[in-house]
Amino acid sequence: MYTREYVEQMDGTHFPGKTFQDNVLKPVFDIQKKYYAKPFVQISKAHAVMLYEQRIITHKEAQDILQGLKKIEAMDMEKWEYNPSYEDLFFNIEHELENLVGKDIAGKLHIARSRNDIDICEFRMVLREKVLEVMKMLNIFRQVLLSLAGENTHTIMPAYTHTQPAQPSTLAHYFLAFHDSLARDFERFKKMLDTVNRSPLGAVAITTTGFPINRGRTSELLGFGGLVENSYDCIAGCDYLTECASVIMVMNTNLSKFMKDTLDFCSKEFNVFYLTDPYVQISSIMPQKRNPSSLEQTRPAVSKAIAEAKCVFDVLHNTPFGDIVDTEEQLQPHLYDSIKYTIRALKVLSSVFSTLKVNKDILLQRAHEGFITATELADVLVRDKGLSFRHSHKITGSIVRHMDKNNLKAKDLSPQIIASISEEILGYKIDMKAHEIERALDPINFVNVRSVTGGAAPSETQRMLENRIVALEGDGQALNEIIDKLKDKELKLDWEADSIINLQ
Image (cartoon, rainbow, N blue to C red; front, side):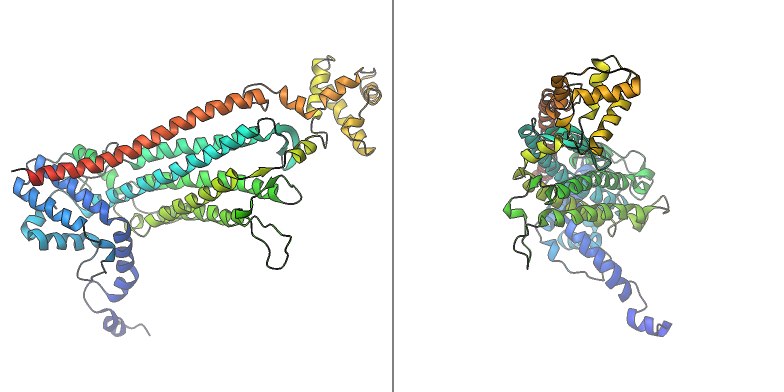
């Protein structure tokens, strides 16, 4: 029974209680050393450089601090074990620095900074790296889709609305449509990355400091794109997390819709997509089975990515606008896991679709079925026979019902049937020649005449494809520039620190 005496005996009477250690502080410490040890040291180096440049600490103090930080940076901090004498990784590293340079010198590093702004800075630095990883993988999958579109500009297929065959299109048109949703996802990631990549350093606890620090300098040294200017916002604002979660959820929702189509197309009934052997599993009892397990395993990864991102909203809604543990170490890994599942899904999809085989013959065959070219027949009656669209729609609908009732196919439609039905509806006969009917009901012609901007005609999909290839190359270059800039800033920070250390 949990009594005061029992709990005090188990937990002790001084901070931190064993229950608190085991269930909160140790798990948090494990998260910190896994993700934040390196960013913490980088932040500390940048802060020491800035303090020296602002003449807040002396050259000798800066030298000692930076030399000590270099030694700590070389340690394998992931092997550190939680020590209840120090509340978290912050105090562990501070203790190590004290051992190396003395308490007085080490204490100088904590001028004009707080765990508050350090923590937020760490979170933003780790998150931007992970966002860049998923953006890079997203572009790889976009390239795969564009390659498939290029191979299938003339692959005629039924397009579906309300899960029913609607009109002929091409597989290239379909792949380009999905690519474009992912291209918008990439743009959302870019905008979100700009929000994430803002420095909160210098906000200190929440109101800045009386010391003459240079917030822009630490921002520059750590590769940020600028500041979160308002110091209260630095500490209290958590919309960089919810914005990131939103973008991840939008993209994975797009992926989930595509995967639903893909798994349908892989079924024996559809018989459209054929996954190559590395991505299928056989049944343990039914030797004829080719189970698309790679995609089936990827589908829950997409769902997990959405769930982990949604967790951010579940935790943060209705919390105070201020410094709260809700936004801290126990929350951040949910976004990391969401990104991890997203990258896994994109990797599998990239491999599966790079090797995908398409049953082009059956797609063309199905484009001839079900009168899905009826819209073009109605359009011909308007363009060539002078009818209003309402009259042509009514006549075409009656023709389709007549053909279905009499088990006739599109190729069986004759001038006599059109003449009879049009006379019944209009009071006079529409004269259509057999070759006009055949052309109107030909799915290839249907696609070719739809050359309006964004249409399914091969000429138009080829134009769109070429534009997308150029845009993707630009996105790739922009992404590489961001990645290279961060690497350069990391090297520059080391150079600045070494310059101070080596200065005589």
